[in-house]
Length: 257
Image (cartoon, rainbow, N blue to C red; front, side):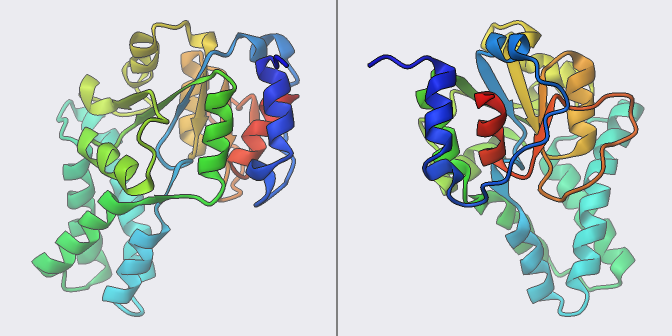
C-alpha cells in the first residue's frame, strides 16, 4: 500500500512519536498549500538537543549560584553573537560561549577555575535529544522529508551532539552559521539552508526553539514552526510562526493537518 507524505505523518503521529506529550499545536493559519510545498525541514539545534544538563552541572559545581550563573550565561551567549555581528567582529560560537561563561562567572561572583570552565564547556559536546525527538525524526524521514540542522553551533559542536545522540544517518545536512561567518537572525545565516538543500525558501520548513529565531526565519521567507518548550509569548518583532507547539510531536500534528 502506498502512502503519500501527509497520510504517513498522520498515521505515525498517532503512534510512538505522540507517546510522550500528546498535546495539540496551535497553528496560526491552516495553509494546506503552504504545507504541500514543504520538501525539507531545517531545525535549530535546541528543538533537537536538550541543554538542561549543562545548567544542572552549573548548579552542581556552584551550589546556590548555578541558576544565576546559568541564566546570565545563556543571556550573554546570544547577546554576544548579535553584538559581534553588529560590530563586524565575528568569532565562532564556541568562543562566544566561553566568553559568555567567563562574564557570567564574574557577574555571579563565582570562582571559575580552568577545570570548571572546561567541564561546563565540554558539557555542550555531550548533549542528548529531548525524549520525543528520535521517533519524530524517524517518522519525518520515512515520510520523505529531507532533514537538516541550521544552527549557530560550530561544526564541531554539532557533530559531537549528533554522535552523542545517535543521530548519524538521520540528518542529511549539518549547517553551521560559522560557514557564513555570521549568526542568526542575519539573513545570510538562513540563506545557508536554501543554498545547501538547493530548494526554494517556501520548500523548507524552519523549526525554531527561540521566538526571535522563529521571527527571523519567517522574515527571511521560510515557513516556520516554533517549538516553544519554554511556553513563552510570541516576540514582538513583526512576524509570527505558521505553527507552534510544545515539542516535535506537535510538529508532526501540524504537518498532518
